[in-house]
Length: 133
Image (cartoon, rainbow, N blue to C red; front, side):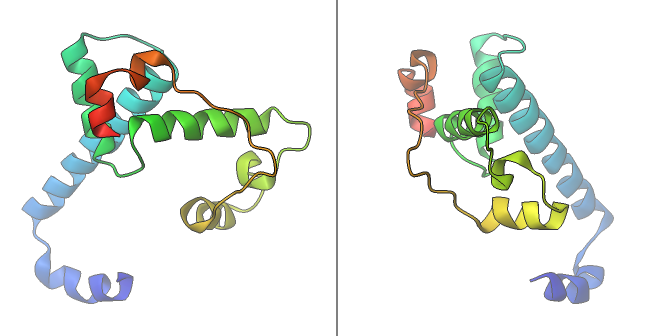
């Protein structure tokens, strides 16, 4: 896919389409995922009116990294693993950047005894979050 893009991009890309790509990426990754899902939903760094909260989380889901409960569970699992005496490199990010990217994109980590992770009722019982899940 990368080779095809490198060959065809110069003939198919316009300044306008590049602008749309940059704005859409900024909105979904920065506002949706980083601000909405990560800072507001996972870390509770701030609160917002319900309509803003729902809008940010919905935009965050568009990134494609997972539903609200999947993001919460994934983040909690990583935090739990990093607190263990012998944290695996998959969670500790001690390997090269390229290896870490490959593990995160294509790998799967199965625990012999995984921790019980519970999504709090605010998200588990909310109809909007259940819809997004």
